[in-house]
Amino acid sequence: MASKSLSPEEHHWKILSSEYLTNHSFFTARKDRCENFEGKIIEQYYVVEMNLTVCALGITEDNNAILIKQYRHPIEKIILEVPGGFVDENEDPAKAIAREFSEETGYEFSSIEYVGEVAANPGIINNYTKLYLATGGKKATQQRLDDNEEIEVVLIPLDEVKEMLLQNKFEQALHTSCIFYALMKLGKLNCS
Image (cartoon, rainbow, N blue to C red; front, side):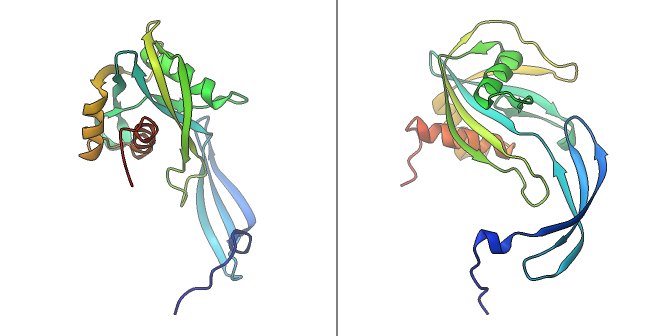
C-alpha cells in the first residue's frame, strides 16, 4: 500500500520533552520524547546539536585546488579534505570560510561564491554546512592552527581533483558535496 503524501507541516513532530545529556562547545547531545504526525509516541530520539559549518573548494590564481591533509581521529585516518570549520556566533558564513582558509592554509581569495547547503546526517545531527567556491587564491600569511590541528596544505591541479572526485577518492561526504557543486559552478562537471 502506498503511503499518503503529506505536506511538511503535517509531517512535523511535536517535542514533548527534552533532556540534555552533554553540553560541549562543539556539540550538544539531547534525548527527546516526541509525538509523530500519526500520534505515535517516540520515547527516545537522540539529537546532536551543532553550530553551522562551512567549507570551500579554493582555487589558486594558477588553477590549482587548495586541499588539506589531516588526521581524523573518529575514523583513525589521515584524509584529504577541503578547508572548513564552524561559524562563530554572529559571524557571516562567507567571512567564516575566508577566516578558516586563512587559518588552515594561509591563502586569501579575490572571490568567494556560495554554491549550496547540505545536512550531514539529518537523522541525528541538526546542523547544516554551507558550501563555497573560492577563486583567485594567493598565499598571504602563515597557517594559524588550533592546538589540536596538524594540517598539511596540498596543491592539486583542478582537472586532477575532478578525476579524484569521480573515482571516489574523497572520504568526507560534506567536502565531496562541496567539490561537486564547486566544479558544477565552474562548468567542469556536466550532469545533463
